[in-house]
Image (cartoon, helix red, strand yellow):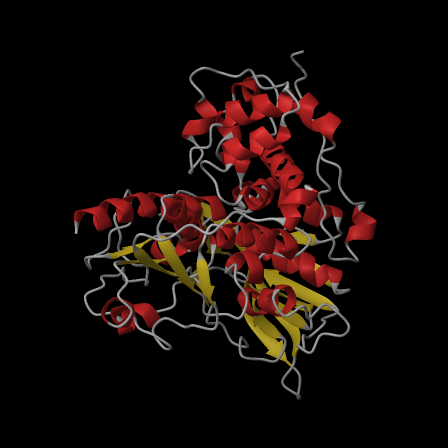
Length: 464
């Protein structure tokens, strides 16, 4: 029976007072009854406007229709025709600006909770006991493709190629697969057991992953072709080089890039009492930035026991982080200081941070991003006591691959130049996508780029 409610089924979550002291997942997921009820809000539009804004073009009405009928495994199978990482995407994709943003139900109320339903279908599949015991047989590869990086772009590219029957090897620089999914996104948003479960699904399809392999150091891309005989290479190495403001005091003890701070917590489990990885547990922490990475860093610091303030140079209206993440941060007691930007970080005689000096800002004409440009207000400096500062103002691609690969054209800021539809770079047989091309963006956009590149690689290999 259709559900014409104007609002979504609410997602069950941990109580903010409880979750701010632990790293368990915040969102608890729909029950079967909630999922079926929410699925019945879908109108099953014939023109499927939601699909057009999904970067991997999942047949959304079809999978939701199966959930409404109680056929949860069928829903999962529909999703995975298009998306090899549904449990991840259901948790971290910005559906509100993509598929849900086009939902007809959103015109006179809230859109259908597409992301929550995707997560539900994937979690139901992953919970099946028989799926834990058995895996798909590896497919025999008919050609060899090397994928650089095991983040969202690399995993999506490898998964699409494996579905076509190609033998694929992913080369990962770190000791754990998953890229930003493993080192960047906190456990309370994306449990690492989920990441490893999804990656195991790719391994079951025959995808091989070589960890501790830094392309550009351990091996070069030219060696992948000449020595190991790969027919094509996809570069999905992400954007892991942190940016700083170049203000006084950024080299003090107690100043982190969000990249380092999150890697210590997420990958090295520094929040655990028995972890061998050290981390500075500040009592008063300032996080500079307004994106999802800033929210992640701030919420992690809060869970380590700190009073946390997010310093952002625009207003709340311009903040780029997901609304859900901002709301969760506020619920957990994190303070937001808008129209404010640091100009100096001061330290004590031992070289540790002890204060931050910030300047008030005003908004002017839009800049190249289309958002109002922040301009400083003279004489508005204020200082605050802090013992830790986390810089979360963006990242750029590591220049290692560019510097070791002749003929690979890049942007001035470091991004690899690649065709938007195919991922083809300036070097024949080399394709690229995700953050290595665009700079830091979303998981699903990187996956969409990886999937498009897989199609182009298939056509390329067939042509040679």
